Image (cartoon, rainbow, N blue to C red; front, side, top):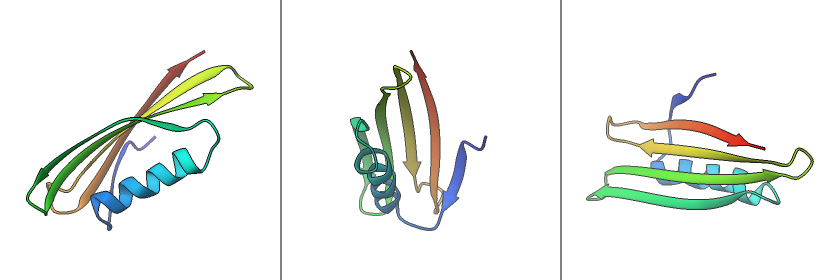
Length: 84
């Protein structure tokens, strides 16, 4: 599964889309932590950590997303994990 990809929107726009899908798009999804690094108004790196509980399976899953535009385009990298 591809874990890193480039998008043609800003870091903030990509972060908002991910947030809306994980948190607003589910009952149990929540943003656990968010950290941003800014260098003026152009360079940015953001880390988001989400958690979601699946009642039927009794599992908790995490999703960690790192977004940056240090190379010029917005890069999205993600990793997931969890347990029952």
